[in-house]
Length: 233
Image 1 (cartoon, rainbow, N blue to C red):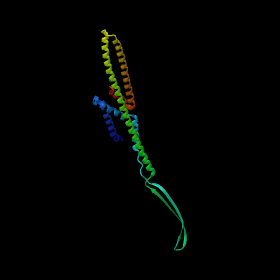
Image 2 (cartoon, rainbow, N blue to C red; image 1 turned 90 degrees about the vertical axis):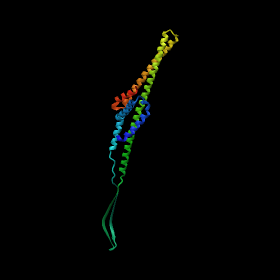
Image 3 (cartoon, rainbow, N blue to C red; image 1 turned 180 degrees about the vertical axis):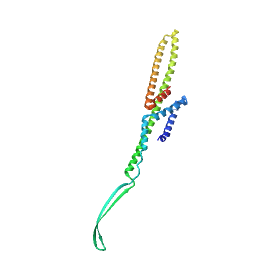
């Protein structure tokens, strides 16, 4: 079963990785991290593991073998016959028993169909869960990267406003026009607001990483959490 799904899974992962090429600007290390995260999810997620076990069990069930089915029985009795040579009637006990057999057993055919249907349903459910987990992981990575980019942008804006604020403060201390004092306070308030936004983005990142790692990673959630943390840096 693992060999059956290995190639489709690898293909899906490669396509997703190709779509995420913009993420890999940090070099090959990020590619390796993404592949490792995929492997953790596919190897350790309990829901996927449970469905894989169910699929393996369905594949172990023996297929119903062909057989012979009794489809009919006939019985007749003859008690007399006429002898034309002697012109006499004779009464003798006589009986015949007949049976009809069928090589194709309808019940076995139905069982075989139901088994095949159950196996295919288990396989489709496995694929659905696997694809859903991969999509969940990549959706989480996109959101983490978005929060990381937002934090970086806020950090740059904060640095710019701090430099500008320092310049205005020097002008105020040098005795420039008083309206610059109001400008200085406005800048300080804006910097404080940016710091609050940055902390909120960091908190959202941490919460998202924790939830995704525990939801997707099973017993290996801590390693997945660490890799997601590196991705958001």
